Image 1 (cartoon, rainbow, N blue to C red):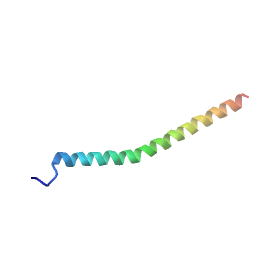
Image 2: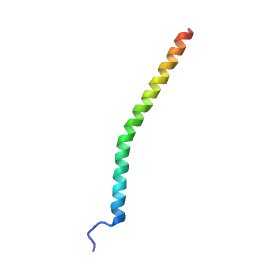
Image 3: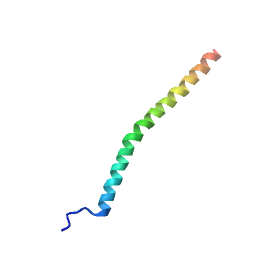
Image 4: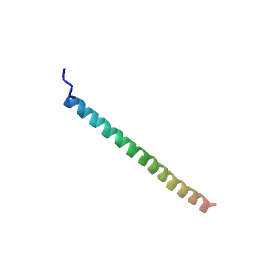
Amino acid sequence: MDSEPSEQGLTGIIVYFLFLLGSVIIGPLEAVLGLALYWLFSSQDETATSQQG
């Protein structure tokens, strides 16, 4: 019985951890970017409506 992990199994584990790390880093950045864009465009809408009235 071979106790060493196979090359394919080790590659899968590395890919999984890289994907997990990317998700943990990119996910919050994407959320912050979405909130910033929402705030930016909603403040422009409020300024345009306040100038009309």
